[in-house]
Structure formats: structure tokens, C-alpha cells
Image (cartoon, rainbow, N blue to C red):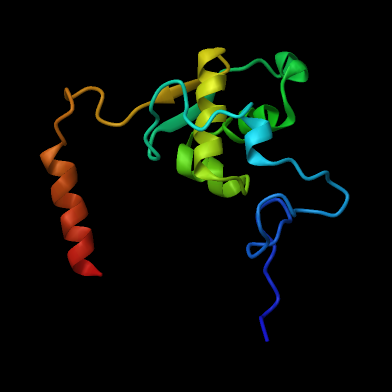
Amino acid sequence: MTPPASPGPYGASHHAPYGSEGADQPLVRPYAMTGGRTRPRYQLAIEALVSSTADPAHLQGLLPEHQRICHLCREVKSVAEVSALLNMPLGVARILVADLAEAGMVAIHQPGGESGGTPDVTLLERVLSGLRKL
């Protein structure tokens, strides 16, 4: 017997498959949300940070998924968090966030942009120390 699923951040079940959040919501397949695209226009790391720059008055003409991302990213979130909190596949979240960035509705803060692609040694040492404590 499977234990009952706990509600997610938007009332959806953690064990429910994508698109089955509620019986009253129509099922929208991920490829329909992305227009059939399987890759974003530019690469987004899953740890890239997203913050909304959109004026709430301009959200009315957007797709519901785009609106949800803009509302969620009023506080800075990673692409992975957007995917998890909205219960959508990571690839779909990447495509939708990239679309919003291209439209100027969100700002993307890619990791490692300031150091020319080389990882920060101090950060790596802190991560290693934290892993050793596990």
C-alpha cells in the first residue's frame, strides 16, 4: 500500500505525474508549452539564478506558465527550483525561462561568469568541507 502523498507548494501531490495537479485543470503536454522545442535558445545551467524584471501589468498577455515563472521569480530562484516548485520537467523550465529572458521579463545570473569559467577555489574548499561533514 502506498502512503498518501503530501501536498506540494501549490497543493499538488509530490507523487503525481506532471500535468495531473487537479482534475479541473486541462492537461497540457510539455511539448505544447514549448511549441515543440526541445532545447532552449541558449544554454542555462540548472544552478543559474533567475529573477523577475517584469512589470506585473505586462504579464497579462503571457502564457500561464510564463506568468507563473515571473510570479515565482520575484524572489531569486535557480532554474532547478523553478522546475521543482512548478512541477514541470527541467527541460521545459529551461526553455520557458530562456524565452522570458529573451523577452526581457527575467534576468539570468549564470554561475561562474565573473571568473572567466574557472571555479572559485574557496567555494570548492567549502563544498568539500561540507561533504566531509556528511
